[in-house]
Length: 20
Image (cartoon, rainbow, N blue to C red; front, side):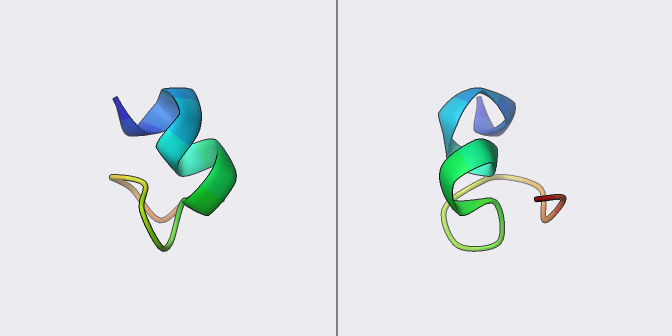
């Protein structure tokens, strides 16, 4: 779920994993 839009837009803020 975080690799779709969350991790891409706010990886460290809203995404699940802190990759981007």
